[in-house]
Length: 465
Image (cartoon, rainbow, N blue to C red; front, side, top):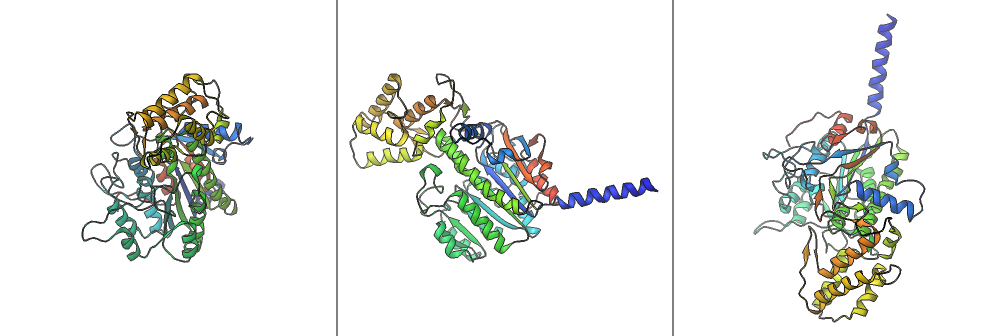
């Protein structure tokens, strides 16, 4: 009798414990392209330059592990397939969103949680119709179907979307995407001022201040009045606490980590990881107020660039203090060069050296060897004098020879190496804290992460819309 009573009490205790771990507030942070090496380089900068004796906040979470990221048709995934895996728990082919390789639609945890009464916010530092955010609401055969993605955005009924701009081109005789969203009850607004003026609206699409780029702007290039990922994170929390204070799910993507890694821009990438960290800190502050009810999961969809801490021909150290002398992203430097050419401006080599010193520390705080000086001058002549150099196209940018050479010199000087301008098949990190976070311990595939959230929230896995 005592043994039976003990068993009953033990079972009851287990049920109560499991029930107590069901999260009411879920933060799902995805660092696009943020493999293990970008995290390592950001932490090295955090320790050796910023002088912090504690690791990055998310590295201190009690659950730290890693996951595989391959897609259904490739050992190296793209963001669409990885986003689908992280949102639905299903593998698919590269470029496909929200459906299996045989084009069967699959449901994201965001939709399932909405059906359970959770408020939903989907936000990113790139475009809200980009692959990772779209994986949480869209069902299309290819990630470039922006008009159809916007239609699915409107149909989702989620509370808030945020990001750069909307790219869907209006078909002949059709409605533009902002009209489609407006008719679905969304207020489409721009920048912090726009959010402040419309924060009483129930459904909001918050876009960048100018909508001139496919993102909100890099942290290293910040201009006053622009959206930032930390601001977006705080705005999502404020909005959900107003429209769905009992429970919510917020997905925050740092898409610009990926953009800068595609361009092999080390300083900008590290500053984006640190900006991502600031966004996570905002969620962590919320967690401290609701520790038994909040779950924070931080991961990546894939690794980009093959960034390495150490490079052949470079120093046997990482002088990352040099990152502080860089004040422009590679994209802005490329834009500067393009503008000079379009304006017909003629630059001397001495003028260009002054530009490099002011914006990147070269020929000033960062000494340039005779060999690298020749490389830079040769690239300058080929790009601006003889104009016989070819541009190199990365996923998100076209870089002229002089820009490429400038960053090659910065990388080898700073001890940073790269293997590609694209993705790699490396493991991605996983960090978790809060209600049920221990369930994320151990080795995983990316499809496991949404299924763990499903189990915690008692959602049965299904595959239809």
